[in-house]
Image (cartoon, rainbow, N blue to C red; front, side, top):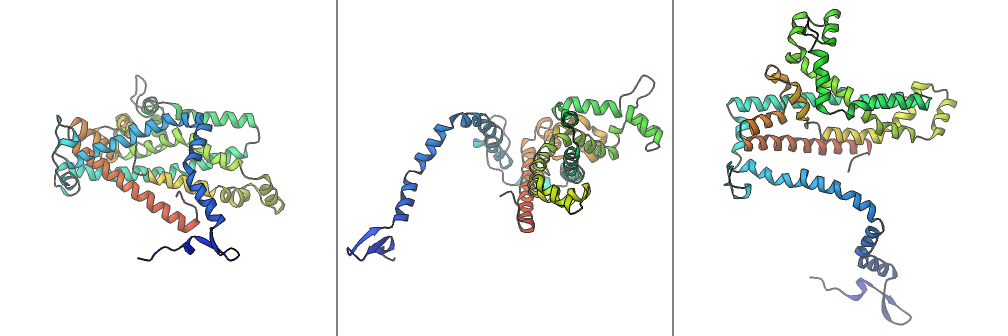
Length: 351
């Protein structure tokens, strides 16, 4: 081992013939010595902000981190009496049963995985661009009063509960008057020749081929306006001089959107896209649970509803936990892949 000598961290003073400490190193040592004192001073100075942070930290602890301990149930023999820590180790049998089992459970799981991916993929293709388009439209409205009215109208569906929203969807496509079982939209589709009267009377929500379309359209109606807030905030932060320069060059509205607005908010789009890809396989089970039924399992059953059905109704918590863990692991890998591709392609990434 190499021995440490004074010249490694001290400066030799030829005038006095002695060693002295490097001034820059002295500053760095002082900063490191009082680092935590500085952090404590900042926390005390801005204690109100950190106090507001406490509820969010508690929510993440109780709803995100502490439940991770229960994921050990994927590898344990299920016992309703003993806690997870005292249950016997079972290995990867639950995962093997889901992945390669010949039972109907494995078939249902792969069907749920396929439906989860397709619902999320369609939502990414059709649902992600809509907030950007709405934000561009808002930016072109010159009247502040009119823009505020339109924004409130598009934001309102987001503040409705999932039960209310799914009830409205059901009434529009299924529940009709005393003389017909078709809703308003179903009657319109029949008159336009898009569906037959038999399908309309049976209910669009009872037809597997229409479930994904209903799910995506209702999702866009519910969240597109609210999601446009981020993109609209990025658009209004663009300097007016950029628009003026484009106008001098003869650019019209569409050209300004293409060459000024979209490049200026590209970093925001990339960050939001990576976040969206991260939750690609996290389809909320509440909406699906309220809209689907046994007739539409083939296109509507997702991993979350699969876990709910087998874990709660079927008392197979190990199987349900294993399904959710596999779903989340795939989602994590998608985030890492999307972030890596974005960083190499555009030098913009989430981390």
